[in-house]
Image (cartoon, rainbow, N blue to C red; front, side, top):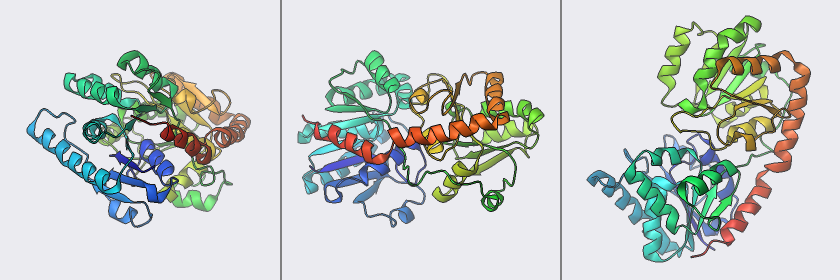
Length: 385
């Protein structure tokens, strides 16, 4: 069976969905797997580090709509590229990284060439599509002719059923996973912490794109309360994104320059060190104008490293952790509740230690890539017209 994956988000771009695709598709039969991935800064260097059959294409469209001439032309160019590869490689099925833009163009190509396709849904893109009549139509059109729709969580699957009328016969749930051999606990290392600029300070870590739903701003607002009890506390943020400027302004307004560590886009090696050496991982997500966290792959990575986690009650994060066993879910719309939950964990070393071992075991037992690739392959084998 020959597969073509079309995805805008793929390494070296950071993000849970891109890492998900990387981990799944690099483990499939290389001779039968082709990928068209979006262009990213640093992609030329990255693509020299692997042996995947991969091409790069421009998929970061200014708008996902197709009604304008520029929108139509962007979709047409991508369709031509996909069509060429499908014909050259005798592709049996196409996989779409998300519904827009790649899913819509694949649906047209697949219909014309009479081959099946599946589409991944991560949750947050549904909110974007629901805000536009044109995008709603494009999304529904893509869903209606897909052989299989893969939701990243039961929470996302419920939204697809209830709000997008996707039938159970189309739906499959596949959770993202984690490389449990790479993301593993290590001893606290003073030299590594010094190189990170942390030294012996207690550190809360967040990894992820700087978007409103991720809740970085809420934890920054909680810092003044936390610093009263933990005056040497540091909040370290790995990632970049559209909220960077506003978050920087908020830090300045609250006079927190010495307590917030903006690390930007870190290398994989440095990010792993951050996971392993921090005291607590936080994904203080909440729903903002309908935008929510579909799953929270970073929570798995932190738990696999033996790090206790805190996450918001919004979206699908409850499927990525065990409340009060591997971490805590809290209403992150409330700065007070978030600060209280973090303070409770920071002050109780025995509680954190128990969550460290429980989180590692939870990740190993449920989210190792070897078992998840087997699940994914079974889904792919069931795709038909």
